[in-house]
Image (tube, rainbow, N blue to C red; front, top):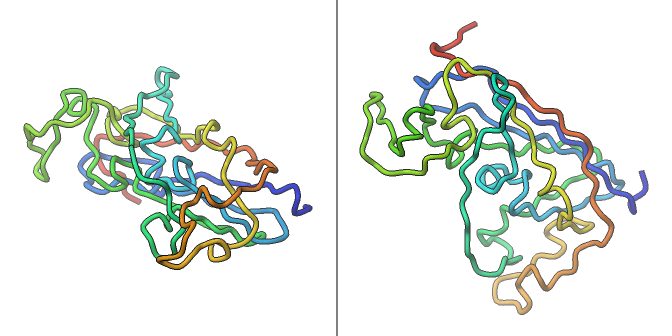
Length: 220
């Protein structure tokens, strides 16, 4: 494919197709991303599925309850922050994803609030509390909407998919992230000082993944 017509293929997966709330560790949600361009390109992944840990609370994923065929509301976090930095070694560096030609790259996170917090069942989440390691309810306030597997219902089957909206108008540039990063102390250090490519970065269809919430751990 010509470099002027970049396209990505993406595969969504879960490390397990079943989950029980007695397990303190959520399954891992992964996206395998492959560029079909003929040279490296870099994506800025803030508020996109390509940084799944933050994308979990930014509307980048959708969960459908297959029992009712209705979307499950997902908790979101509104963030106010300083301009994004392209300084080498800064905390924003994690949002720059460089893809080499025809080389699958995996990005992943725990499929729960915070990318790894212990998931809570729907009945607990709706009351706005959490459970301790022994399953006792703690009077610690939290949101009443879940995130990922957090807040789902035992005995139900679900499917998770990628929301297409955040994939529209992706910020991207040809080259590796190192090519447009700057050293600490250099001027024009913000991301806004760099002009993204004007050609849209196309993302192909992404299949949804089914999973179920069980009352007991599944083995074998």
